[in-house]
Length: 111
Image (cartoon, rainbow, N blue to C red):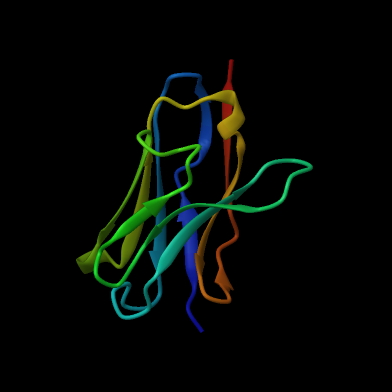
């Protein structure tokens, strides 16, 4: 079973930036894809970004152009760089790999 640990959440003003990290217990290339999801209060969990074994990336329309998913193979860590944050980005952000989920990290964007 793959263990995923997120970090990097916090409180930021609208227009600001945060970088989330997802540290995996396994080789992040061999266990890929790795996904970032988010869940806002009262809403369903939605996929935000994904990175495949080959390094291809995909984004939800709501974050495209503002968020970037990347990975550091040597550190077995996947990142989510979030720029131009909006209040509607406020949510708990989760790292995911198939049936494996991290504990989540809270991102709060104030207006």
